[in-house]
Image (cartoon, rainbow, N blue to C red; front, side):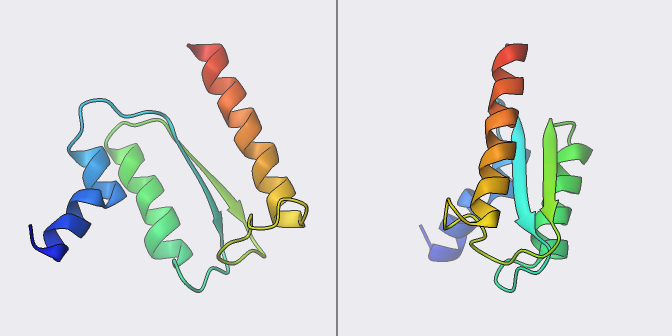
Length: 95
């Protein structure tokens, strides 16, 4: 399979558009991300998932860049871990 086709089949938007079972989605994204642009990656994926009727939450961290949660003890790691734990608890309580 050509590399471009492999990439497209693993692309998150392709997966949620072409799968029958989609788990709830949570996106934690820094608005200052220089590697994965907030507007074209985080926000557009969130809007795409919602337009397909999937359960999706977008957590925007205004000052954060790429890898904001790399250091669990830093501000980004603490904030993202906090929201991830609550998201999982919410989803488990609803099942």
